[in-house]
Length: 297
Image 1 (cartoon, rainbow, N blue to C red):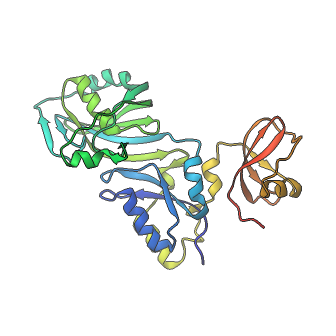
Image 2 (image 1 turned 90 degrees about the vertical axis):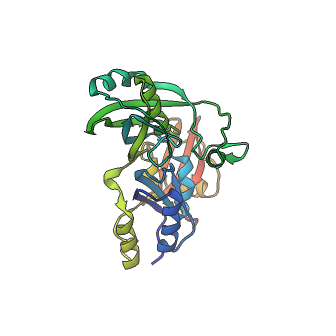
Image 3 (image 1 turned 60 degrees about the vertical axis):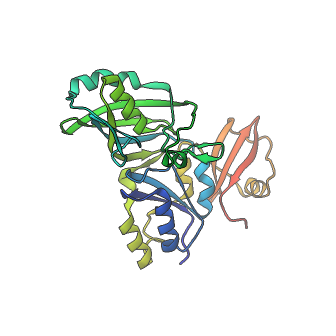
């Protein structure tokens, strides 16, 4: 049975790059048409949404790019990569208390500018920063706007290790946030662990481990067990619009429909039988297709 178009939620294991996961799944799913949204560092685990087939076109169109992480920050150590996989640059014999940490966390809430780390995939003059970093080079970078929506202390599993829950905008580097919190406390800091628990509309509770996915693919169950979510799942925040056959024909042929009785805005569009057609926009009572995700008749 051919693999359906849709979205597969993977609980990425530590030690794998996001590209490693796609490479493994291409063989298991029997398709090269895969993509993902929101790269995770190799040491990080958690939500990685993999888009299959026609769903790959939805990855860059999703409305909610916010992320939530559980990050273990280790105080008393700073590395060249900003996490424990890197080479130590500074150590300090220090004791950070929960009370001291709680006192500085509010400083990091809201809109702010963040300097991308050298060990990142951000490209300067067409070259990823991490390639320059591996050569011992430092490249001039421009701070980027980010938003930290929430920052909460969850627990302390060991002295000077604190687990924070961070809800933030796309493009936020938690490694940099950890180092900046250390700076506010006057001590070096690095990221000891990172787990993404939410990415846009996708939650960790709905993810599946890579071994389970591979086993389901091998047995043939993956195409039928409901793990591959419908494409329209990523557009859940949009209102739904059900159209008749005449309007459907217009949409399928790229023709506008005038005098459409609905408010201006973007919609998920379904036909009269509930088949997801794609996205459409209404402006001035004119309905126009934005992107089709269904097969043409």
